[in-house]
Length: 176
Image 1 (cartoon, rainbow, N blue to C red):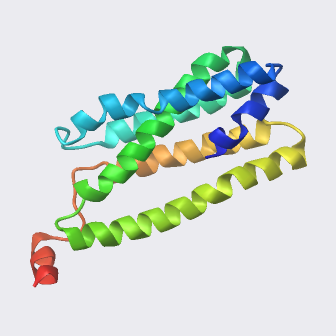
Image 2 (image 1 turned 180 degrees about the horizontal axis):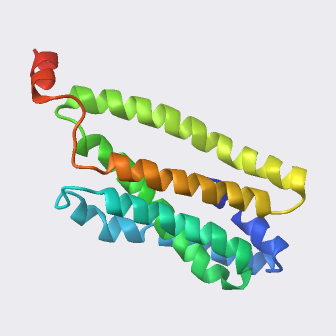
């Protein structure tokens, strides 16, 4: 949400026109669809999604670092941000069904994950804006994004492991 909210302003501060910044923002949004086309059909076939989760987060980390270090390549970073964030949301939502034994677990996990996830996501744009206003530059917000992407890669590696929550005995007991 931070990239969606602030990418045009960041690009304009880097010297892009409003038209160029808007086009690159649209390119990023369009790129979020690519993982849906490519990743979704593969998810059920992969017993372990750790590598996919880490790659998604690292793509976003590379995009944040790229925007900081080489803003002239903003087209590439916009696409990479879109692919990384698109894959991350698909994986995050898919983990709910891939990691449970039954619908009751899926509902509980989904409710918890979406409540906490969207609460944190909603705070992202405001936090990035406050960091930008306090520092007068995009360095601190981009470094925070990169650090959070590194944390996401670690969490994704753990969440992507071939495991389910609870055991089959626990699943049978809760259905009874």
